[in-house]
Image (tube, rainbow, N blue to C red; front, top):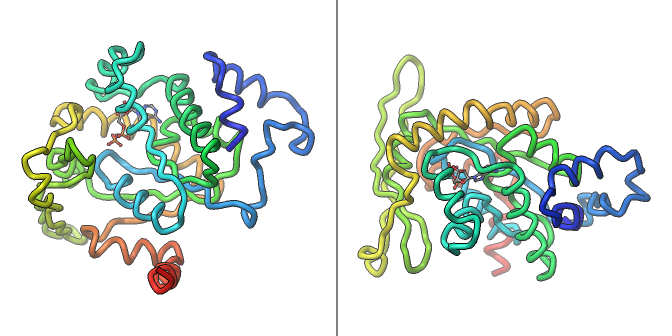
Length: 276
Ligand SMILES: Nc1ncnc2c1ncn2[C@@H]1O[C@H](COP(=O)(O)OP(=O)(O)O)[C@@H](O)[C@H]1O
């Protein structure tokens, strides 16, 4: 990922990226494109798409543990910046708490810093969660590196809202839990869905917090913004033959094995646990 990190350092990273990308230098001679390695010689470069509350973070982080790649969630980068009370903090808090998207420029800068830090630690490959979220971000990413696969997680909208409202985070260990108990009956040929709550262990129970943007009004706005700005990103990757659609059949116990199967990783998990 040297390309993105090197490109995005200047504060005007997007216009800088655009300038670089519009040059007609070939990929062999342009060092900006040196990260376009043969997929055989590097770890996976995947993207997770899906509406707020669908479980991108849960499944992306599990896959990252399995595949040994970093889980890079731009929402986490935004929240870290918010918590740091740095110069961007106030501006970001207003945007996030209205359910709007942060500017592409700020996101690219946060992502670049994260990739640069990872590169310094010798990280290779990634699963991106929550990026790209606009066509502009998708084009920028496409311009600097190869994405092998895009997983599009899907759940019906009423379930998404319940899941966001039930979401809790342990303020000490940072783990995510969910208090919602979902039981939707099948209707009009659509299958029903059940998801058991993901309850915290006793030592986290008294330390649970709710994200400030997980209120009903803000979640509804985030869902609206997703369909306006991020659904076109699904089409962007679909038309490039990279999109894997995955309808979650239930909670983690039902969905995780099916997801591994869809990714042809069911054998991989068995081999990994046998080797552990
Ligand atoms: N790629 C991005 N582009 C613009 N804004 C982003 C991006 N990623 C995260 N954000 C901001 O951070 C907030 C939280 O992101 P995230 O944790 O991914 O939420 P969600 O649960 O809505 O998927 C978003 O509502 C948005 O304001």
